[in-house]
Length: 532
Image (spheres, helix red, strand yellow):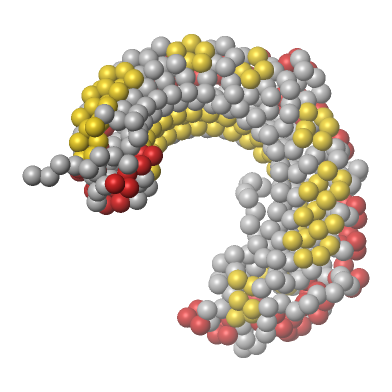
């Protein structure tokens, strides 16, 4: 089964509205569905229910109704993305008769505008009833994006046919049932993201051996990440991010990551935002060759980045920012030909030069190496990444001039080279970057004029050239930058009249302080310009 974010929903409570009326005949099935129709309505321009849901045709021919089996019975109702509105009636407890309804397995009313009685992306409130466990035929249960609260009942483990459980983005609290996984042999996806769940992750979760997706992120789980997760041989996506989980050992030899080396189908590992307090093991290179996302931002990682990371040839995203990693960036990253995002920023202490081999990463779209201890010059090879969208090399110790090769990056949207030791002039062809929205060259030693060509970077919304040694005038043509909302040229050697039209009507004195001889309006706290 393919993994998805599973926006579809099965309205377990909503079954009470009409499923209890479904018996063994198609006429009864059609009557039950027509009862639903009384509470919902499509846009007038698409009144498909009124025109199609009639007793003149078989219920199996109705739009959104899916039948199966012999004889044909209604097995699913799919009314997603139809712009439906309406208010579903108050719902009581799940009747015991429901377990005798063997045909209907799935209802999808997602991406509509039903009011607060529906159960996905609305405001349904209350607890999950304990007798939910009576729904032994249920295979998809999606109650995500509501305001449901209380504990997750252990009786859910009685729903042995369940393939998907999605309780994400609610207010569930307490611990997971200690036998989670023991009685869910068919479970493929378990999504509990964005709740208030606490306690440890039960090691019994490994008994749900068919799991392909496990998402417990954005909760308050504590304790060690159970090594038994490594027994989930079919696991493709693992997201335990933003909890308070720890690693069983500080030494890389017994790292949790080691336990995943036999999960050959893994495509995504997210552990970001947990105080793992460990080192990356060399066995990182033994992870699945299918791995596309490896994200361990803000995990208190120490030591170096193992050269074996270059073995993860399918990686699309490598995020190791906000840790305490040291040493150099390994040249083996040259092998990550599919890499689109490389984030090693903030809090790390990576040293040495920006690797020349970055030019091999032709798929790279986002490069963030800020707040490290990188030295030397920006390699000329960086300017060959013609498809890159964002570069952040700020807060390092980079030297040398800014190459005119920057003009090659026609797709570039953001570049931040601030807080370095760059010198020389701003290349005139920087104006060739028509998609550039964010440019910060602040706190360097740049000299010479502000290029008139910057007015051609028509998408610019943020421009910070402060704390350099720039001279000459502020080009009046910058008034044409209609999207500019932040502009700072303070602490330079600029002179002449400050532009006064366009976005410049909104900038304050702080944008211009400590320059040589700027003049303009009194509100900018500069001298008046001479006329005549």
